[in-house]
Structures are given as C-alpha cells and as structure tokens.
View 1 (cartoon, helix red, strand yellow):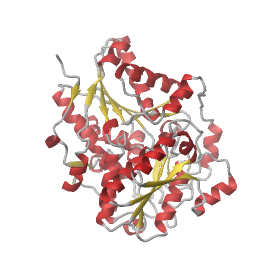
View 2 (cartoon, helix red, strand yellow):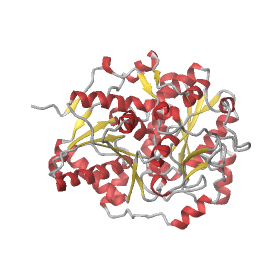
View 3 (cartoon, one colour):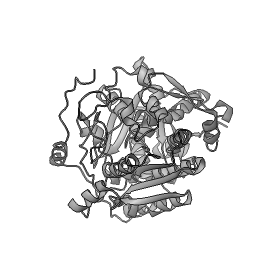
View 4 (spheres, helix red, strand yellow):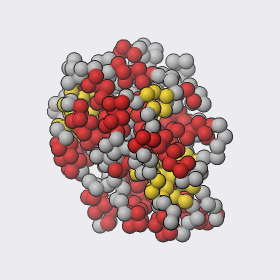
Amino acid sequence: MQDTRITLSQKDMPVRWYNIQPDLPVPLKPPLNPGTGKPIDPSELLPIFPMSLIEQEMSQERYIDIPDELLDVYRIWRPTPLQRAVRLEKALNTPARIYFKDESVSPAGSHKPNTAVAQAYYNKKEGVRKITTETGAGQWGSALSFACNIFGLECEVYMVRCSYHQKPYRKFLMHVWNGTVYPSPSERTEAGRNVLAETPDTPGSLGIAISEAIEMAATNEDVKYSLGSVLNHVLLHQTIVGQEVREQLVLAGEKPDVLIGCCGGGSNFAGFAFPFVKDKLDGADIQIIGTEPTACPTLTRAPYRYDFGDIARTTPLILMHTLGHGFVPPNIHSGGLRYHGMAPLVSLLVDQGVIEPRAYHQNAVFEAALLFARTEGTVPAPETAHAIKALIDEAVKCRETAQEKCIVLMFSGHGHFDLASYDAFLSGALTDYELPDECIQEALKGVPGVDMSGGD
C-alpha cells in the first residue's frame, strides 16, 4: 500500500532558513525614509524592532542558521506532514496527484508560529519586556501569544474590529496563552482615536491595527513591535515549510508542477513557494499561483508602488503592490486576507511574472472549502480555502486535458474557529463583492509619489 502521508524525522528538520534575496531576478529596492526619500538606515528601525531581526531583514546571506534553542521549540510540532489528497482526487475524478502541506497541526492551528516563536526568541534575547502586534482573523495574534508565553514575554494584540466580533474563539485562545487583545481601532492610541472620531462605525483594517501596535511600541523603551507577515525576516522564518516540502516530495518520488497558496501579506505563501522559485528561475517548469479575495485584490488589481504599511504612516515606505494605506476592505470572512499591501518580495516576483496571482469570490471559495472538508476531513480556514479553490480549478483542468500533474497546496491553517463563517455560507447569507475601480482609485490618492528610481 502506498503511503499517503509523507513525514520527516525530527532529525531531518531543516536547521537553516532560506533567504531568497540573493536569488531574485532583480534586486529588491530598499525601504525609504518618507521624509528624505532615501534608503532607511537600520538604526531608524530600532525603536520598534530588535537589531537581530533588523539584520535578518537586510541580510543578503542565502542561508541563516536557526538557533538550537529555537529548534527545540519548533520540535513541538515540526516537521509537519505532507498529505496526499487521494479522496479529493477521487471526488474530482482527476489524473492529477494532489498533495497538501498541513501547517494546521501547529499549536495555534496555522503556519504563523514558525515566525512567532522566532521573533519572540530574538526579542527575549535583547531584553524586551512586551511585544505589541496586530491581527486580522486572529491566527497571528494567537501564534504570537503562544510564542510570548513560551519565552516569558507580555503580548498585546490589536485585532481588526470586524474579526474581533466574528471570531471570538481566537480572542479566547490568545487569553489562554496570556495574551491581551483589544478591538481595533481602539481608544488606547492616538491612531485609534483619530479613526474612531472620523468613522466610528468602521470595521477596522490591518493598516489601522498596525498603526496602533507600532504607536504602543515606539512610545515605550522596553516594548517592541512584531509583524506576522509582509517583512523580509518574517518570510525568511516561514521558509522552513518549503524546505520540508522539497525533502518530502523527494521521498514521494515527485517533482511539483503546480504550487498554490493564499496571499494576505504573503508569509505563508512565500515560506512554501520561495524554496522552489530558484528552480523556476533556473528553467524548471513550475507554475506558482498566489490567491486572494476579489474584495481585496492587492496582487491582481493594485499598482506596484512605494507606500506606507499602515494608515497612520508610521512605517517606512516600501515598494509593493498596494491598494493604498488608507484602504479599508469590505467586511469579508477571510480576515487574514484583508491587508492593503503585499510583501515586497512577493510583489517583486509577481511584477517579474514569476508568480501568477488569482482572485476569487467568497462563495466559490467556501464551496471549494466544503468539498475539501467533506473529502479530506479537515475544515480549512477561509484564507486557506482561496488556495483550495485554485487547486480544484487546476485539478479539473488536468481532468479535461488528461494531464497527470503533481499539484501541491499550502494548507496554511484550519477553520475550527471560523465555523460561523461556514454557517453563514450554508445559510446563504454570504454575498460576493467585486471591489469597484473607483474605490481603488480613491484609496490610491493618498499614496505618496515616489520616483521609482530611488534607492538604486
């Protein structure tokens, strides 16, 4: 009988992170100081990040060693399994061979702890007392609360208001791990109070929550800020996932034809796909697909420009696909995919044509999620379900063309705390939303004009 679960021994777990920057088709342009328009000096980031993470953010080393103490924490749940989706294959009547990398087995139920424990570790090493952060659907807030609890740090989370009310069990999970969580925008920060004064009924956004978390970190010397996606060092930490997949596919006797993941800020997708990007650049015939909601079409419809990462414009300017830092997405159920921007590294590879972006309506996404849950058993997070929709589309194409492709999915997290979203879908209460062009153009009005030759 053929194994349908490909596992690695803990002794075979990767001991280095892979940094894609030396292997990019063109160099990544640096973040800019919004005041001077010049590349930012690393010292300017010290009020919010520890130096060790700043060094990783800027590093051009292809591999960075994972400290032994951190590897010991990873072993709580890593390596994670690569699962053959034989029941889904049968249901689709496809000749494609479908695999999914199951990151839902982590304590927080997603890929997020891969960077959360790393960031908590480096902050602890530099004497930080508390970490502040934002969270959309609550996956990141849960993961950072878990990580801070392990290393004895306080954790303060600003959760996007609509998700705070839609997903109360994520909030409760943060409390289990000693995290404190507030709906954002809140009255605790100047950034939050300003938003509430202007739009008291706002559903909130990741851009607003980031502003609140950064404000709290920047005004307290022993407090630092942590981001769960977008930044280079966050994507770096996630590459333990893709490196495991490479080893597991070798054990399965497979080479990937299609790689698929969902994109919010880009971390789970990047960690899964980046270890294969150099293969594609070197000529391997690999299709790499990143998925997102039509309600927040950052990769499929947003321009590639320098912009702020938050609504209060406290971050450096970074070059990315952006809908505008003031953009507040509609109140959809995929809270983790409601960010106005995209990781600079992912944005660059989309701009270079290496990554193919796709956007989907939420009803089609939940329909795909149900098929996966009813065949493979695990209920996917709404964010993950966007990737499953693309997976099913590709498997159906294989059925129609009789192509026996190997398709690999990044299963970024389970949906056990998202069952209200499934109930809304099953009761017919979900509506599809296509973001109008005029909304994008209005949000882009606040994006600063930056000479794209800057920072060379």
